[in-house]
Length: 111
Image (cartoon, rainbow, N blue to C red):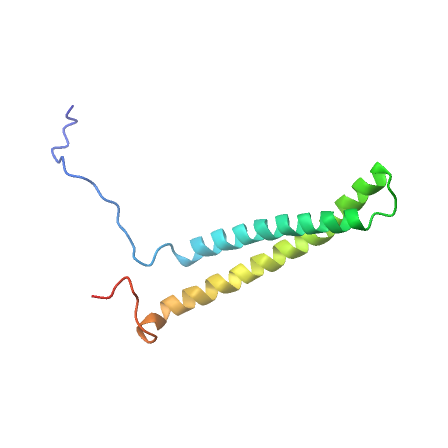
């Protein structure tokens, strides 16, 4: 089936050897790290709440689990997000300064 294009060759997308831009990496890395930190903090807080429950009643235990999860999830998520922000920024600055040329070269580009 011919659509009148005339060119039957393959079309390739442009490929940037450096990968995604800074803001794209920053949003992905910080979002993923925040999510992972929140999940880890929730699990840790729930375990701490369950361990420290004041009573063996179900309502008290559920309340202790929820309080523990709420206590740690946001803090761990924010901390991991900030670490990802710092990591992405330092990585981007090192790439911008082309430090790989001064410390041994880029193994992908060596010829």
